Structure formats: C-alpha cells, structure tokens
Image 1 (cartoon, rainbow, N blue to C red):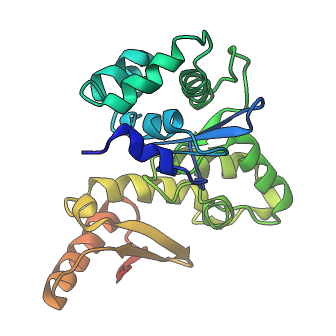
Image 2: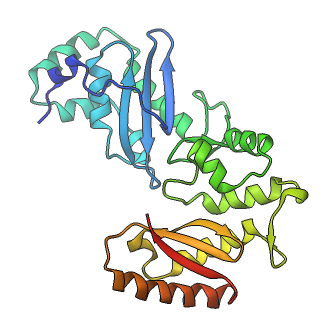
Length: 263
C-alpha cells in the first residue's frame, strides 16, 4: 500500500501526452494532467513542476473515479485514504493555516476544462475526441490546410478517431460537409465519407466485430480493407472473412469487396 511520504520523492510527477484536460497554476508553475476514457472515468493523472506530495497523492487517489465522483471530491477523500498514515496527518496539520487548497482547485479547474469550459465557466473550444484531447479548432485547422481532408489523414496528424472510435462517424460527416465539392471522391453517386459512415456502422453490427477489434483501414476503388487484432487460426480467419463479405455486401452493395487483414 502506497504511503503519503512516498510522494515526497516525486511519484506521479511527469508530463502527459494527449491528456483530456490540462491546467496550470501560474503562481507555482505546477500543472495537472488528466486523462479520461469514453465512459468519463479517470484513467491517468500526473503533474509537473515542483515536487509536491499533495499533487502526487491527488494523482493516485483520483484514478479510477468517475467524473461525477470527482466533481464531489474534497479534502475528506485524502483523510479517508490516508487515515492510518502519520505522515499525512503531520502535513495536514500544516495545511490548516491555508484557506486556498491549490491541489483541489487545480482538480476542479481541470474538470471544468474537460467538461468543455474554462475555469470560472468561460466557454472554450468544444472537445471532439476525448481519447486524445482533440478539439474542434484542431479539426477545422486540419481541414483548412489539407488539399484532400480525410478521417485517416486527420488521425495521422492529431490521432483523432484512433482510440475508441466513437467520434469517427461525426468526423467523417464533418469532412464531407467541409470538403470542397471538387475534392470529394464518389463511388456510385455517393461520397466516400458517406460510404465510410455506413460501412463503419454495419461493421459494428457484425457479431465478431468487437471481439476481433475490427475497423476500416482503407477504401480504394471498390475494395474495402478491414483490419483486426486477434490471434486466430488461418481457417477461422477464412471462415469469418467469407461471412463478413456476405454480411456487408448484402447490407451495402454487392459490387463492394471486403478483405480482412491482421493488424
């Protein structure tokens, strides 16, 4: 079991890439990083700046909690977690002199930013991809500078849509709306963005899709490449591949060919 004095050595002190929310305390230059999953559960937390046992311990005891739980987080959570830790009570005694408890304020500011608002509830750029912290301005910036914006190109540049993929449908629609007509690619009177939306939806309905971690890799001509990540025999792969072809072709277009490849 981790002890409060363990955080004196800098535990959880590291910069985080692709955080869901980041906030900095100007007075001390300390920053807090938070990363949430698609169900609004905090999966990682870390901080940078001066080594601080309060921030270090905060990053440990908040992980695994839901956004709702964190919105009600208080100093009592520290006391409950370290109730038998003498070092904690010594530090807490010194804390009684201070009205402003900065670790808790940093957490609240980070949660406000994650919810799409600046601290003190000033509106900011909406968060589009929560897995990698990609915001609306990042997407529009990519579309504006790209000659042929695609969800794949956006993913390579910002990683948007490369996590849980829940934002892929929204992103492909956005690409299609913002892409100049002269740049849009069509297959049988329908844009590729619309085809990708339909393929992605039907693929999610295929029985093995979730277990095999299937996702669309490319769409060229009439060929759709779908990658998967699962250890299976060659025979299993061939059987599922044939079923997948029949399933998707029947729901979309008989002229489309679907191919499974290992990730």
